[in-house]
Length: 244
Image 1 (spheres, rainbow, N blue to C red):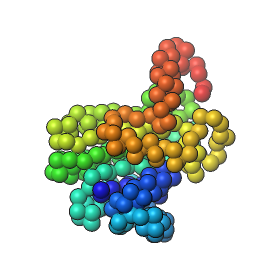
Image 2 (cartoon, rainbow, N blue to C red):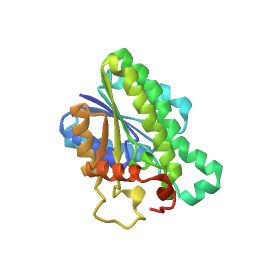
Image 3 (cartoon, rainbow, N blue to C red):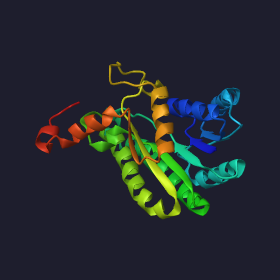
Image 4 (cartoon, rainbow, N blue to C red):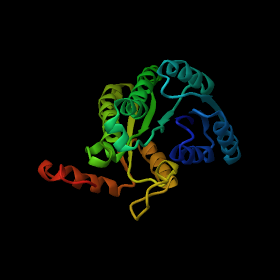
């Protein structure tokens, strides 16, 4: 199996890559830092990956997406699974008061993903098979006061994925929207942890199983589906007063 992982040095991406390495897959990794990519490459080869290659890319440089993906597909000889994992968690107060900061975060969490999906969709249609999976967030289900800029970017991607799923159905391409809840990772290091938090490894196991099953919209862990159903059902006249 040939697996492309974008944003490969994030905690969830690393955990997912290790699972695929242990299955003996060929992997191509895309991320921003060469040193981290080299370390991860060595780790995955030791774990059993049949082949590991990588490309360095700042994912906000949209003009470089096409050539980087071209190189990845050439290196692997086609892609069975493309997993998009990159993202950033902004300071809500800063981004709601400064449009340039908000634009930067929306580019990272939303527009860059759509740019990648545009290129990937064309390539997967040419192949007439495969899976494109994207890590979004439960934050995209409803605009909550503490993170609505981040949530808006994730909602943008989830809506795009829903339409793309239908568009590529006839081409034997599955689209998976992975919506993690609270994940204990370097990105959330400053937050106090509680019983609803999960490890990147747990989320990665859910990702790999869901891709294998051909799932569509995946809450990780599964109890977040119930939590977000309740959150989405709260009437707006109450919801607008909530600060959680």
